[in-house]
Structure formats: structure tokens, C-alpha cells
Amino acid sequence: MEILIVDDNQDNKMTIELLLEEFENLNIDEASDGEEALNRCKEKKYDLIFMDIMMPKMDGITATKEIRKFDKKVMIIAISALDEEKSKEEMTINGAEDFITKPIDSKLFIKRVENYLEILKYRGTKSYDYEAINLFNKEVYNKSVIFRVFDNSSLSYFWEYFLSDEDKKVYKLSEGIRVLYALGAWLIKKGEKFTFVDEESDNCHYITQTGLKEIEHIVKKLLIKHFDSNSFLIKDGILSIKMNKINPQINALKKESMKIDGEKETVLRQSFTEKITAKQFVKSSAIDLMDKIESLEDLEDRLDKELFSLENKKPTSDDYMFLANGLEKYNELIRLFMEFQSIVFALSSLVEFLRTINDFNINEKNEKKIILLLTNILLDLSSWRKTIFIEQQTNDIHYLDSSLLSSCLQIEMIVKEKEVEQEDDLELF
Image (cartoon, rainbow, N blue to C red):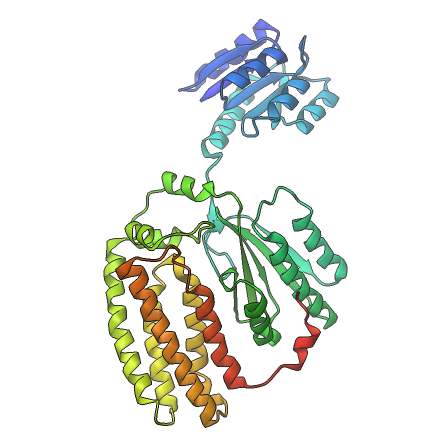
């Protein structure tokens, strides 16, 4: 741990240095004024700085302000006389994290330094919250921002929070926020109250909107038509939108700092802003998971035989249930890979719908369309499996995400076979 003591009084520097002897593995440097401290910080990276306020040449307030321009992580602790309340306030405003008063109380000092070192030990590490509510990823930081929306003013605040903050470096942020804003405005017209929850991971922001159960089918239709299918999930009245962070180096840093094998690796891995080739993906995947993927071919054969048998007969509820169960087993294997959660969602949505398809009156013509679409979906999945896991010949493993979800939703639209009047009232774009 690198420590810098900045004080023009040699006795004060010596007092702090002697007290720091209570701790191990500390490298301690000294500076006699703010100017010298600034120059030292430009040449060397420090973890902790004890900064006196009143010094010649450059005072502690100015030095702290200048250091913060290029070093946001170093912990700066102001050393303050009892009657310098205004100076202590200015130090805090300009970047000091805490202050210690002179004369120094040795017991209090040692206790505080213990706390400082503990904070520094974990500074820069991430803490995750596995109880996240978004539909994409449960591995998010243990911090979320909740917006309770009940009128146009609170909805406008949600807009301003994201779009007026230049520090939120997110790809296509305005597009995602615009979608959520439009849905929110529609709900407010209907007198509804709802929430937005912003959750964050190393790679993405996930913003989730509640209160959409009554219009879920409308929202699905509009989003698939106008929005990137890989960027949203909707289920049980909850919509989550994923927005990738701009910094492309985050994923590389994560790979270097975390070495995780087995199934846990699939839980931690996220969608990347850059494209991932099939060769890169297969090489980085656990061997035991790759072995399990071989059983997908058997499931494809069984489903293909069932679909072939339905080409010349009327499907029964048992037939649709057989197809739903087969696709669910197929999905269970894909679910092992975090990269393909968009495919998992698309198939889950299809399985759920197939299990309720007999609740609708479907004419013969539309039944044939459904069987044809299911056959094409199976062909797409078979081709996707071969392209990625066997031939390894695609430069983007996510090439199927959007079109698969579109095909699955198309079956729902055929079955329901009607335009929803409310759609005209919900303008997104």
C-alpha cells in the first residue's frame, strides 16, 4: 500500500509516520507542501494521502482539487485544525473523503486507518446482487435505481436522469429510454402507476418496467417490429431492455481478472458489444457443456418426425403438447449457455404458447401455417447448432437471435388473427 504524508511541519509528518508503524506492508513517502505532493502524484500512484490544509506555496485544498483531475481513486484524508471548519468543508467539496483533526488522537487515528485500509482493499472490486429483477441477467451490482412513476412529471424525471447525464456511457441509450418513456406515457393516460428499475453489470444497463400485463401482446408486436430483438425481453407483464456500455475494453478486463470454469462460467458470461465468432465461443466453453449439446440432434429428429406426421392431419392438443415438451427439453440445454438467453427466451415464449394453443379456435389454413413455421424454426435451430458447435463458421454467434424471436411471435399473431385496437393509441417511434 503506497502512502503519502503531506505537511509543512516535520513534527506532524513524524507523528503520522510513527502511528502508521502499527500496520504492515505500507510504503510511506513525504511532501512538504501541496505543489510537491502534486508532482509526486504525477510520478507515482498512491493509495492513501494524508493532506494538511494550511501549507505554503500550494495549500491542501488546491492540491486536492488538482490531484482529483487525474486520479479519482486515491483516498485523500484532510488533516485539519479544530477551528478550520470552512476549510474542512472546502476540502470535502474538492475531493477529500474524510478528515482528521489536529492534535491527532492516536487511538482514533489507528482505528480510522484500519477502516481506510479495509475500504482500499476492496476498492475497485464488484459486488453482485443475485436477486435482480431484470429478465436478462441476475449478476448485477448490488445497487439499483428505482423510479416510481405516477404522472408526467415523474416520467420526465426518468428521462432527464438518463439523457442529461454524460457520464452514462451507454450504446443507443436514447433509443431504449425513448421506448420506455413512450410506454410509460401510455400507461399514465390510462391512470396506471408503475416503476422503472435500473440495474447494472460490467457490460450493460438493464432497465425494467412493470405494469404491462394487460398490453403485453401489443408491446411484443411493436418492439419486434421497431426494436432490436436481442435488446428486450418481456414476460408476465415485465419488460426489460438491455443497453450495452460503450467501453469495449470491459469484457477483456473481465476475462483477464476472472478465471472460472464449469457451469458457473456460463452464468457469469454476458453478451458482448463486439461480435464473438463461433471458434472463439467454442474454445472458451466448458468441455462438459459441449458434450451435452450433442443430444440436441436427437431432439431435432424426434421433433422433425412429429411435424412431418402433422402435415396431412389436424393437430390435437396432445400433438402440440408433444412439440412443447420437446422444445422445452431442447431449451434446457441451450439455457446452460449465458450467451444464448435471447434464444432461450424466444423458445420459452413459444413453448408457453403451444401449451395454451387449444384455447383458440384455429382454422385449417392457419394450422398449416403454424406447422410450416414450426418446421422452419426447427430447421433454423438445426442449422444454428451445426454452424456454431460443429462447423464453427460464423463470425457472430448471435446471428439467429432476432429472426428466431420474430418467427416465434409470428405464430402467436397467426393464432390470434386480429389487430388490436389499442395499438394506434401506443405510438413508440
